[in-house]
Image 1 (tube, rainbow, N blue to C red):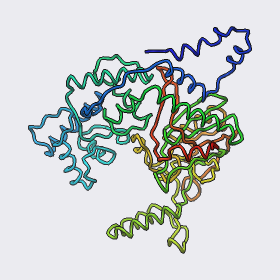
Image 2 (cartoon, rainbow, N blue to C red):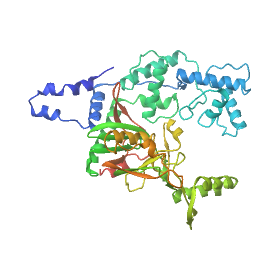
Image 3 (cartoon, rainbow, N blue to C red):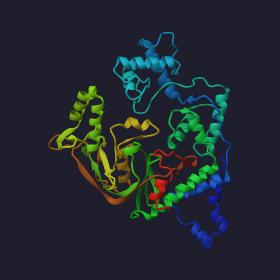
Image 4 (cartoon, rainbow, N blue to C red):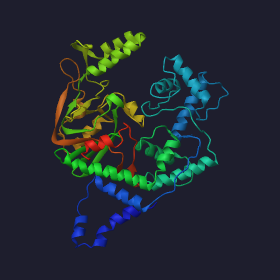
Length: 468
């Protein structure tokens, strides 16, 4: 794997000489955010790779060995229960017959008939098979190719070489779709927000993006990040939420301490806005005062679908607690703390101008999706408790507090007790929109280049950052 760009950086002080003023400047502590960008730019300036060619190649479904075992077990269960004929071979390939059998199983059990073995169908299959498949992690659908041919192996070899070049892996270039190759492809697709669990045209086109185009994206992102110094108070603790990546990163004293997947707002009216603020506390066991806009949205659904009126009204009144009348929408509701609360067990308010929060979620299965645009504007953390613990480990939350006890504490009314936990130091929060980022992995630094999920182009982001 070429390392030219990295070697150039490591040799700067030796070339300049240890006593020179330039060398002393080079030896200053690099910026934890921008330095990897500069290194990545140097790497791509010194290296280029031949493009991978898809050329109308068929899609190839990704499956690890463990997943193939699960799929074989599911097929056998469908055979044993009569949904597939006895002559069907349980070979881990979800063909058209298997998908039709899944749809029939879903219909018989009152589930949505989409043929996808996901978070609603897996619990049913676990019950039938005695298996223990994680419904929040796995989702199986129609396989696009089950047996690999010579052309498939050639394409996979080119992909392995490209993944190694971009520092996403250190694979043996052998054309085999083994577990290591599958996981490297999935990592690339997830970090670059490329949907579908297969080798497809979108993935190959993105992987083949040349060095010049990547350098341009890196320079645009670098300019945007450097401009952020003009915004906010500049604390020792900084959170960066990058919306196109659907990632949150926490930097403390110029070190990246942790990062985490997030869910962001839907396109259009509910998009998460570019903004900033200061986080000063965490709230344990929050109530959710249901916004009027969301209740109004539910009412509109009822008006469009009268047959759903009774069921949905029961859901509103059963899940949400009535707290008063509103002349516009009829009622105000709130939801009590607990596992089903959309905030999860903790939220973090940073006082942004749009009133959006960082918080947990009751729908963890959504994190298996690559593109995660599901919220009404807030940013849902993959693990809000882990976020709390990491802040506590860094001394930003009192280490005498036991989160596991706090979330289970109840008040005199028997409900989970709401508690506010102040941060020892404030944390500055930047919600940004840059379409390139550089992280460090076990194979070196690597670049993420996600799509423009909100269709902003450059104009809106440049105006926010103060560019003309």
